[in-house]
Amino acid sequence: MKKGVITDYSNRKKRIILWILIVLFILMIPTFLTMLYVFRHVKYLAVDDHVNRPLQNVYRASDFRLSAIEHTIKTSDGETLWCSEVEAAEPQCVVIFLGAMKEPSVTYFYGHAAMMKDLNYASFLLEVRAHGESSGRKLGLGFTEVEDVRALVEYVKSVDKYKDLPIVVWGVSLGGTIAINATGLIPEVDGCIAMSPFASPDDQLDLILKEHHIPGFLRSAQRPFTHQSFRWIYGKERADNVTPMVQINNTGSKPVLVIAALKDEAISVENSFLLQQVAEKAEFWFRDSSDHFIVQGNDFKNVTKDKEYCNYVEGFIKKIIRSAK
Image (cartoon, rainbow, N blue to C red; front, side):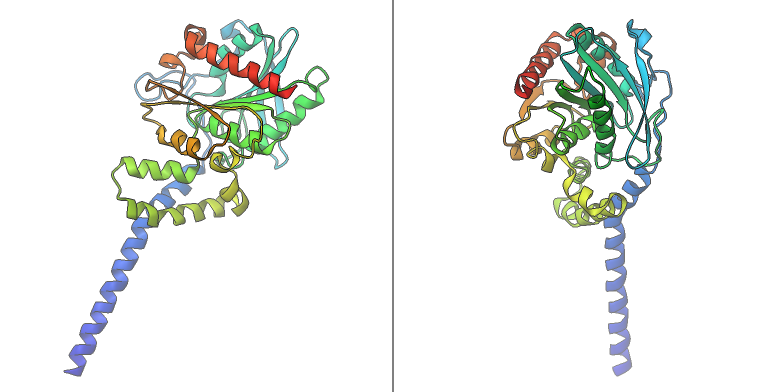
């Protein structure tokens, strides 16, 4: 009899341990996938695939009737970055453009650079680490690319014609996330335009799981595992503090514009709602569209056709210039 009780207790204990291991495994799946996802280098197809990857082209300045100077920028942590400078006749400010995670490449912003040139704003199209012609085998998710922006800002400030000009950082998706972080962490950056940013990598993953109908209690239980993986990969300080949720209020009096599409299916607009809840001074513009990349119809080549967008961002850059004086 006693042996049966012991055996029954032993089996029950084994089942409990097995279930605990199963639950832990399930909770760790998003963490494993995240770790697998970030160790890569994004190479563009150099041609638009209108079915699966519609914005995979790589443009040259000449495609937009521009001339440009290509630079190689070195970061403090050893990455080598590709950058393209579009000069202005009498520059009044410098705009740094940043692309998205998978697409579009930053070269899609040559259309924006042409618009900036007409306004006498110089542009730098920066390809961040682990993308295109820049070095790196690990995506930074906004944690590490601040150092890419910092390296370019240091170069800009070393050029006589730019050293006293305001600097604006303008990015989309991952680039929007980097823009907010860079504005909070780099004193020389005077303001930013962040299009479709995520609030933080933790929040973005949580919202993805929510969209897939994962119950809230499981998402809450899983979140510490993912955050710990970010700490392992990027360091505790970056994982805890280099996110828009933190940095949007480190921008002080610098003008910050967040633009999001209300029907965005790539990065939920909930990210921008989360930022809006904590932001003390940032400005938010929500477009009634599904265009994740904000420009109407994702038509970067003909960006000036989107008059509402152009007028809004032009006005905001003027606000940054006035604020920097």
